[in-house]
Length: 248
Image 1 (cartoon, rainbow, N blue to C red):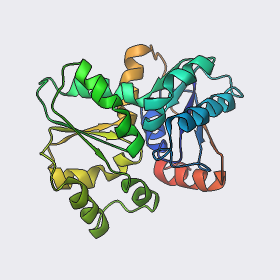
Image 2: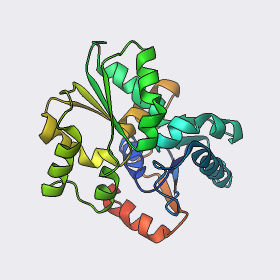
Image 3: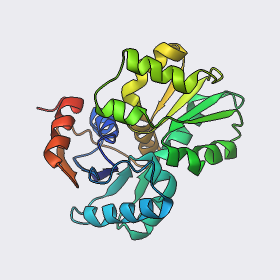
């Protein structure tokens, strides 16, 4: 299968990493809308317009599937993308909700949802989890995490101060949904803050789990072809991709 992965910027590379580790696809086409990142502070209509434009871009590649790595787009524009696409479109929010349900058997578990301002405002995770019977939910918009990750700051005093800023009044959760593709890069810092036993729901791992339930993957692809595209400065994106994904 040939898959397109769409994100507002570079964060979706964490989803690509999971896809590569599980060897699901023969070819991966990544598109990051780096010229207009971040999406998390934009209004719904703008997010939908950008998402539909991404679908048009992917029509050049005869894809079998599109994975929407961006949580904000998954929360606001998934149906519009499906209406305009010529292949199935799968989003990370639905996958994250199902992964959380699979990981937590106790419906009274305390769940903390992290995301951009737009993702949290959408209440997409809350709605989906409430429908499955989970009611002890906390949400927190943690937009400062995005520029810190893009500056490759994953630990140290700045991260520790930011964690205290956001979480000093948070009830200790059983699980944290990393509702932005940048956030898995802060997993170690989050575990140091909340404790090693905390369950972290990673968008990349969740989408792999979700795809495995929806499709039959009979063949492993050890050396898939991967192409990287960006709406601005694609060479910078490819440089980061090589570093994060350990590509030659």
